[in-house]
Amino acid sequence: MFPEYRERIAELRANDRHFSRLFDQHNALDHEIKNLEDRRTPSLHSEIEKLKKEKLLIKEKLYAFLKNGAGGTASA
Image (cartoon, rainbow, N blue to C red):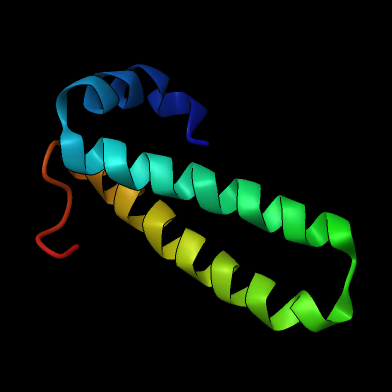
């Protein structure tokens, strides 16, 4: 995710608790989504879609941090 910001991500993960928590949440959601998709159960489709939306919102917040500097957005 965001290879062009690799160094900035490492810096923020080490020095910004909020960014680090968001980053970890994004990775946990990614892992959970992959596990649910591997089950290939149609009944899980709505749950997977919900998790993907949550993951996208977190990704947008992470990008705001990276683009705008420490602190990202005022929300979250």
